Length: 280
Image (cartoon, rainbow, N blue to C red; front, side, top):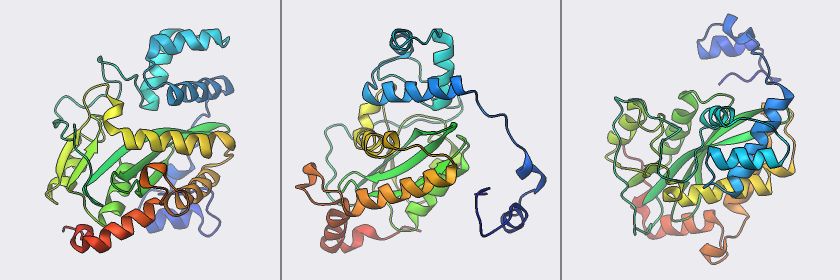
């Protein structure tokens, strides 16, 4: 991924190393207005606190805040942020019609060991003058974040980068996601099929089917993102990298008998040494 803030390599050098056109790197997209940034940040705060709010209720809350915006504008913002209220209805993170969906396999199922079940999801991360998107893969048994990636767009490569990095260390028996276009695409599904991984997808409008990742989003936002202002994408990556290190190795979880995710993961891998083998 090209990093315009990288002090070690110029844009020209990065383009050469990555085999991409240098001319495209100098394109400067029009920055969103302060009003639009503030609106999306507020939508993110409300949705993180009450993920069952749809566009109608979000519009009502925003109007109470003094933001005179119509429902159509809120629907557009939610669609571009990749979020939807938890309720039966249209899926705002729409899959392509030709893409296949899979049933939810995890109702009344508990992860029995590390790498039994992984979950993947994408969330919105606010910057001082814009936003980014965070994808993360979490092991349901240990709550360990296996891999993550940040990008300024919702294009496919950053999701595949996170998946490939996770598969370089282990493979789960079951991989769960929502029905969004990233996770119903052939490029994503083929990676899972080649490793004989069972594919599970949340029911439409049921973010609670991926509850461990939803809890992760609440934790990172209340403990890190909402407490800081990221001036640049580079700064966001550095702070979020530090938080994930803290979360995985220092932060005790009540549900894990106050152990850290790393302690539970490493102990489980010692007990089941074959569980962490990668499958090529």
